[in-house]
Image 1: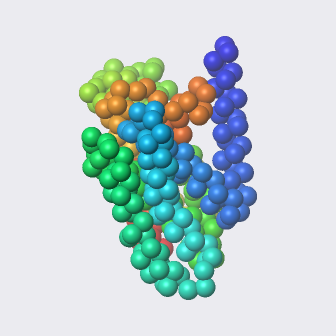
Image 2: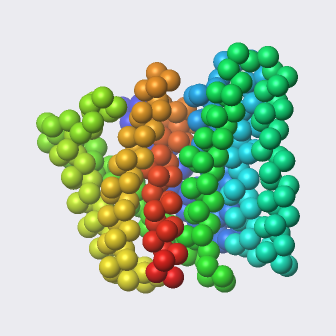
Length: 278
């Protein structure tokens, strides 16, 4: 009972923070997802790099800083915080190129026996987490328009896919989906998650008018397919480093990356679709 109450309280606080950040305006949105991006990067780097030494601590800070760069650059441009976005992008690219080589310089002086493995993990964090959250800015902002409802719908569908798959799978699951990576996932649960996500996408059309019904249904299909793959990818990561959860930030729910693994994976595909139809 105590564990259930802890999970419920954590979920309540999490939802309130998410709603406040999403609908508090453009700047609260940017702040919310910059924090989420940083926390996901920290958990990821802690999984692949952490050996509890001072040099690993600074290595993780460097990785978080580098991973945040794509999101920060995209946010500055999308929020029109500069007078000439084209010049800003050019200057940022010129500054960013030398900055990313600090990882090589850092490893030169750490004495690590696997320096290029560490560098690879840092760059992978930028691609796996930093770039998708940067693409979230392209989903949320389009000129003077701020599509908070679209992002909210994506989050709802992502969580509905996870929850639906868990509930249906726990009751009716018999056939393993990907036993080598995630033994508890079943085809029945996956199909249940897909159905629930598509039904939710259909319902969102009647609540939010930012997209057509066909767009919500296509995005719902993207969420159901690639959100599931994203969950499997994080399971593969956790299995490779032999841990159960990415972190302990959310008591009863694991870490931040556990909550956003599927969401991160859908962002490149949803962004590509929305940029195409816009």
